[in-house]
Length: 205
Image (cartoon, rainbow, N blue to C red; front, side, top):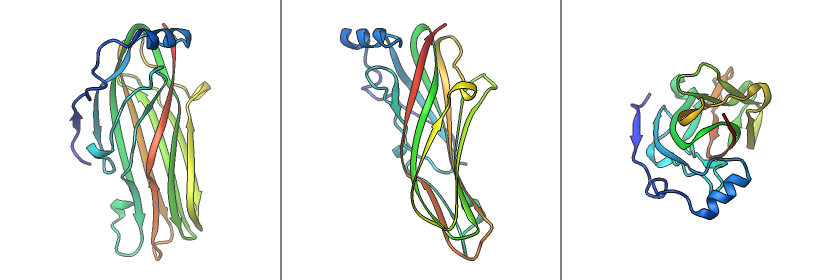
């Protein structure tokens, strides 16, 4: 696993209070007046600085979080260590006091080249720093398969986790690409190779 890296805050994220239009839009849609990503830390075998961003949309309800280098591989001459690639990202999110939020959906897309006897899995885990509850979602594809896939990870109802009440939370998102290579004679590849779009919901404490 690569060492934890802390990214500087992007200028656009560190700007001052939102405009009056943005504040009115958030108030009308039940979200805080101010929300931003203060810092991003990451670690794992499948992420790097070039694949990390964190801007919120103007209404505070979506943000982008690319994982462009998650590629799991197996087959002749490939180390078993490449069967799984993951990226653990921790976002320090600051917002107006008196609110809490949860992630409702994260959309991952990728590609898979799977011979018979091999399956590929896209796994997503959401949790908050200092909390024990986790929300999970998994999509598994069995071979033979050669093509694109979409994994819409939903974290609602009993699978939802909420941030602590306050004005700052650490949101942890773990993305994982995993091959189960029962067939080790043929080459297999499984990717999570386009940015997930992460949706959040807010409520007052």
